[in-house]
Image (cartoon, rainbow, N blue to C red; front, side, top):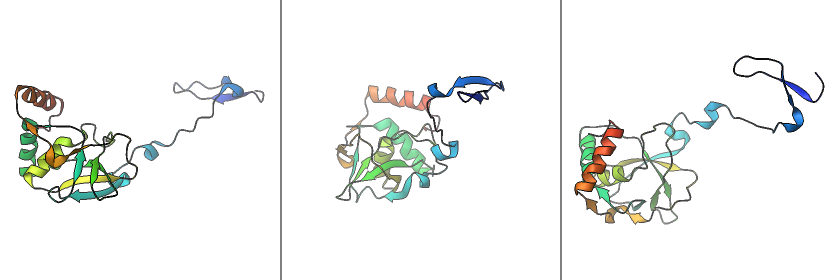
Length: 167
């Protein structure tokens, strides 16, 4: 083997395949444990917001009555909900952050969980992220109207089918 080739071991276990070093880009792949956090605490500070005293801006202009009722039922029965992701504004208010949850693939942004916790007068578990996203939440949670029409019911049924945790 000359200085322009290198041994490569592929996934199939084949050895001694050669590649030209000049054509290989330098790729650094971090270890899997460096890319996926093992807890919410690794993603930011876990806080509990009192939504009656705190301003939270959310991303959706309305809330679905049927989804809210399902979540409130879960709150009443003591279900453990994953946190929502928030960032803090300079004035002490918070923005809902639309961040993909690496620990729970069914953890949506949290808009309906936030509204439901406000209605149930319960603290909302959140992760205050270290770096806010680019998308800005712009609807004050307390001003979000609740919709309970046929379209909302069909949306709820589709969500319930997708996520079995919905009641």
